Image 1 (tube, rainbow, N blue to C red):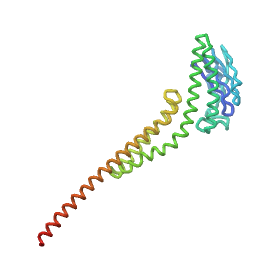
Image 2 (cartoon, one colour):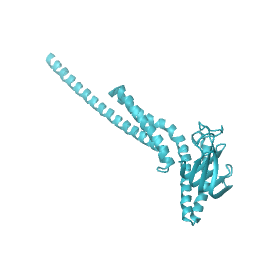
Image 3 (cartoon, rainbow, N blue to C red):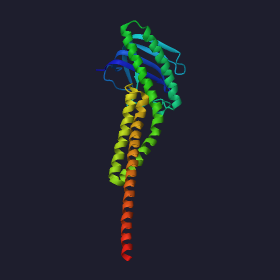
Image 4 (cartoon, rainbow, N blue to C red):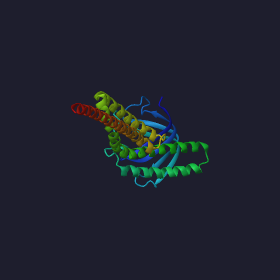
Length: 262
């Protein structure tokens, strides 16, 4: 039907956030009134706000309310980005992410002040949704920042896990070792992908969401190292006991032979 609710539209210029549009409801229509196809789609928005920001100076911020707004969305069949300078969060450096984060924090602070001063209950609910959207944007940046540190550190976690795994491979065969390696790699991958989603949605803190895979895999690795060392020490004690018994038996027969000769 083309009907939408709680619409959020973000506009970027050269990879920088410039406008955010919030609307209580919206409707997608085509230029001719037929199906929604082609390179341009018209969207009608109702009961919302436009937040305009200067990408270089977030303090130059402007907010406009509207009861009805018409905008045109330009696209192509492949939904390709026309801006070659555009960078996703994963492509940004830490410095670029921190710069984005600071600007979002400034905007969040302004929205929270407006929320505290707002009297109208309908506007309060809208402000709350806007704050939640910006919190999710903020968390997305934080997730990428922490991931740039946690993923390289995963090599340490896998080394801790791999050392005792080598012992297990020699005892149980290559099949056991390869199977365990695949299982724990999949566990790590699921933790990373799931952590990104949970961290971005504020279900987990971004820090915990990105470091939890290393904590789990590294913790298992430390546990396996501890167990392996203890088992090797037990085997060593048993081997030493066997050697001592063998020496005593040897000495017994040696003395018997010596007494027989005398």
